[in-house]
Each structure stands twice: as C-alpha cells, then as structure tokens.
Image (cartoon, rainbow, N blue to C red; front, side, top):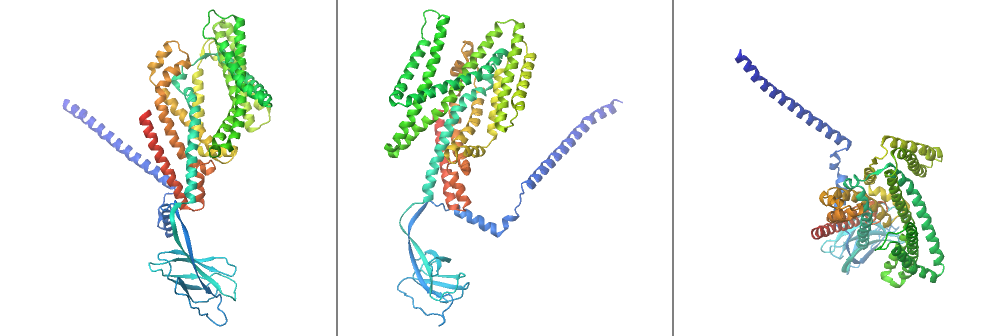
Length: 620
C-alpha cells in the first residue's frame, strides 16, 4: 500500500514537468508562428520584392546615378574648343555625290557618303584630332542652329569613327555642314558654380541651425522647470488663490497692453523731433532707475507707513513705464542707426542690418512682453490675496467666497477657450463660443469647489506640469518639415522661416530633455535650500542650476548638431539652407551637383560632431 502510494506521488512531478515542457513548446511554437505571420504581412504591406532588380533598365539607371554621385561637380577647367567642319549635302545634288579633298595638314574628317537623304545613317571618321578627346558631332543647317547627331571619342592617335543618323529636314540645294568639336582643358582647375553655390548654402545652413538652437534654448530653459515633476509637485494653492490668479491674469494683460500702447504713443511723439527723442532716450532710463532706487531702498531705519507704501508702488509703476518708453525709443533709434550704417560699412554692412533687425524685434515683442509681465505680476498678487483671504476668513465664509470665485474663474477660462475656437473655426455663434462655455465653466468651477474642502489646497503645480508636458508632446510629434511649411506660408520662403520652424521644434525637444535632467538631480541640495526658507526662485538658482549646467550644455551642443541635419530637410519646402539646392538638383536629375551638396552635408556634420565631442570633454 505504501509502495504504490509512493510510486503515484513520484510519477506526479514527472507528469507535471512533462506537461509544463509541452505547454512551453506549444507557446514557443505559437509565438514563432505569430512572429512569422506579422513579418509576412509586413512584407506584403511594404511590397518587399526583388523581381525588379534584375531588369536591365533599372540596373542601368542605378549605375548611372551611382557613377554620377561618385563624380561630384566640384572642380572644372577653362576649356578651349576646336571645331572641324566638312560640307555635306542633304539630299545629294543633281551631279551626284560631290568630291572634296580635305586638308590633311591638320585635323580633318571624312563623311561617308558625302550626301544622303534625311534620316539616313552616315559614318563620320576623323583624323589628326587631339588624342583622347571627346565632344559632340553636330549637323548645321543654313540657319546656323547646331543639331547634335552624336558624340566622338578619339584614341591615342587622334582618330575616331562614329555612325550617326541625319535629322529630318527639308531638302536644301546648297551645302550644309557636319561639325565636330573637341575640347581641351586650359590652365589650372577652379571651383564650379555648383561648388560656390553649395559653399554659400552650407554656411547659411550652419548659421540657420545656430540661430534656431539659440532661440530654442532661451525658451526651453524656463519651460523645462515647469515640466519638471519634482519642482512642481509641491506647488499648491487654495481655491480662492487659484481663482483670483485666473481672474487677475486677463486684467493684468489688458493693463499691460494699455501701458505699452501709451509708451509707444509717447515715443512716437518724441521721435517727431530728433532732439526730444534723444533726450527721452537718455532721460527715461535714468529717471526710471532713480525712481526704482527710491521705491526699493536697501536699508530702512523704520517700517514704512501705509501711505509711503502707496507712493512707492506708484513710483515703481512710473519706473516701469519709463523703462518701457526707453525701450521703445531704443528700438526706434536702433533701426535708424542700423539702416544708416549699412552702406558706409560696405563689406561689414551686415552689422548695421543686425542692429536694425534687433530694433525691429524689440519693437515687435515689447508690447507682448509688457502684457505678459503685467499679467504675471497681477496674477501673482491675486494668488497672494486669495491665500490671505483663505487663511483669515472663517470656513463658512470661505465656502461662499470659493463658490463665487470658482464659478467666475471657470467661466473666464472657458470663455477664453471659446475665443480661441471662434478664432480658429469662425463659427459666428456667441452661444457656442461665449455664453455656452461661460455657463459650462461656471458649473465646472462649482463642482471643483464642492468636491474640495473650504481650505484645502489644489495641486496647481501638477496641473501646470501636465498641461506643459501635453503641449510639448504635441509639438514634438509634429515634424519640423510640417512646421517649415506653415512658417513659409507666414514668412515667405527663405532661411528665416527655417529658423522659426527649427526653433519651435527645438523648444519641444530640449524642454523635454532639460526637464528630465531636472527630475534626476540629487534631492539633498534641494531639501537643504528649502529648509532655509528660500523662495522658489532662490531654490532653483542655488539648488537646481548648479546641478544641471553641464548636461544642459551637452544637450544644447547635441541639438545644434541635429538642427544642422534637419535644416537640410526643411530646405525642401523653401525653409532655406542647402536642402533647396539638393532638392532642385535631384528634381533636375543633376546627380553630380547633388553629390556636391551631399558631400558638403557629410563634411559639416562630421566637423560638428568632432567639435561638439571636444567641447563636451572640456566643458562637461
């Protein structure tokens, strides 16, 4: 009894082992079968086939392209032509085939027969030509237009034989001409027009990538802090603070737009008189600095009174207005001085153009920057007020305040989104773009207030984090090629459109890389700085930036390398750079010229890779 039970218990593990091995084999076989089916379907979808490789026509075309690419059109010689002519009749004259005696003291040709009907084959034989020379064989009618019949290639003794077909022409009584032309290189080689054009465009490509990288870095760095989870997860604010921030932002933007408009009108009035304009350019920053120093004293013997705080606030506002006025005046005179310097500087006239362009950029962006700064300042003030109200108001009263502010801020947000929808789609119905969104936003705000306690804080930082990440992911999914098409429509063809397209793509890529580097910093310094009671800005300056400088430099140099390569692609849609020449030559089947552009791209990318590796070793 015991023996049988031991045998049965010993057989069970063996059976289970065999079953598991069988199951493993079946799974492995099914897995291999699934992989084969997937790849078989992939072959069908991608139309993988080697049948056409054996076609003679495709092989000849492939070899012709390879040989052209292997002979880039970089150098050329000045060429001297040696034409040799022989009279020819088409058709034969009434007296029969004419007899001519060629001059054998130099290069000469014998055409057999000496006359023939149109579309007939004739043999052209040449003697005493330049050894190992080549050139065309032309038929020249009385009109003097060269009609190429074929090509010649002389041997080492200057002899050639070629059979050609006569063109279809109207009968002419007088003699016509068979002309053979050989060419000889003269002097030293020099760069071709293709090589010089390629050099100019590859320089344009490098600086296009440099400007795009520079613009992208300036925008990516602040955005990367907003897209870093470890910096944003602790950012919270009570409902009243969030709502007042949302409500204060549009008010601040409006005030900033009006202030910038006032400063712009004042600068235009001063610029009508050169003396007043220069005086304003000098006085406005000095007066603004003096007001700012008075409003923000370094040492105070006693706390300021309430009225003094009001006066200081007014002084700060006046200093800001004077600063904006000075920037408007500076942009105007930068444009004037830059344009005036273009011609006197001659070869360095681009420096004057640069100054003028900087003035244009400042003038174009100043109003927007003033509006954003004003909105940010008023929004920050609103957030502080909301936090103060939440902390100094009873819970019952906070609930009522939150309901009012939540509904108002939700309505404002949704109306803003509705305005964007109206701008994009031009619906023309306020019910869909204003009143409907306002009601929906108010209801959403009430729901948010209802689901949170009166004095609980909302995860503002994580909301900003997810919104920023979503925008970056969306931008990164759009190819720079598509962005270039959009900017070409806005800015016309040229490298500036390429700079803007690559800048936007650079922001999306670098902000992600930068933010991930911020998320991977050591938490020790961050916690130590926070423990001292430092502000968020001080925490970033003293705990975050020292840890991220080396990788930021490395990522920036790597992105410049990428932008050089990407700029060759956006040139296909008119975004500037060498891609335009490359596309043009490929479309014209001029593969020798295209080979020059591809060689230039290869050399530049290799040099950029070497320089960036050396800089990373020394700096990073």
